Length: 345
Image 1: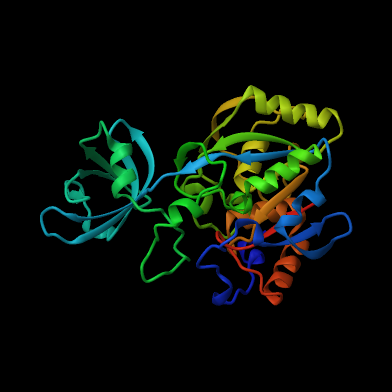
Image 2: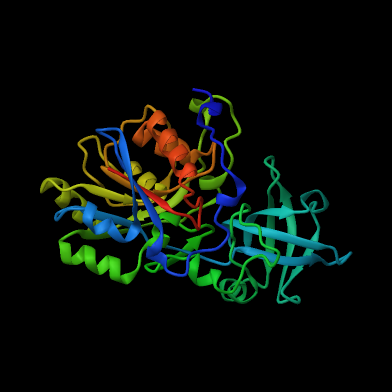
């Protein structure tokens, strides 16, 4: 299949630039795969669509302020970097702007010289390896000087706002390590989670640290050739047990988001059992993939020609997915990270 088959028209004004004041006030398009139909609803009704014995699987990763603004020590020119992953102690792979001016040996200063960095390697994909000093208190320093790494389609004159530190984070975020939020989880509130609990829906938490692979553009024409970069994930014995017990009792595994889906599908055995895992998810899901771990998917609306849209199309079918997207455009749903969601049954 060609990546052009996963395109759709989206007016720019439908790209949500700010979160709603109330998390669970988002709209929700409910899709029935069996009847190939959909209906308009809202996220607060999620408990109505789930059943006792279902298990809701959440990704409890926590976004850290991975966007650093600084300048080159020699010229004073501005520089912006996005921390991607720690390669080894003190060294990080980063995306940088302006990249062409940051060659090996370039010295950088961030936060009024609270943190210094030196470019030590330029990788084939254009990213850089930067060695930071001092490093002993690195995570605490970037909590003070870093900014929330909002996606590039959120275009504001003022950039990231103070409230993004809270709103670009799920209410159940626990384990720091993501450079992007698992956005399907942004709609949840303690009230909705309590409603689900009262109904008898179990909650299992896993961790997948969302990395650059999740939102890296698809750079090939042939979908089968696309590969999503590995991302670190953990599924505990407790979470695996809850998921397997759900399946054994006839309940459904409800994945909150594409990142949760990737983790679950990466940890399922040949017999259909979810395994406790601490490693890297390197699975790429495209149409034709046979899902073994996930029965129901809650997800936001994704960019055209993206790996996330490929995963959703694999789950719901390309035709049904794109028809539903066209309906969402006509009905003026809000798109992408701070936008509305869809529940695929």
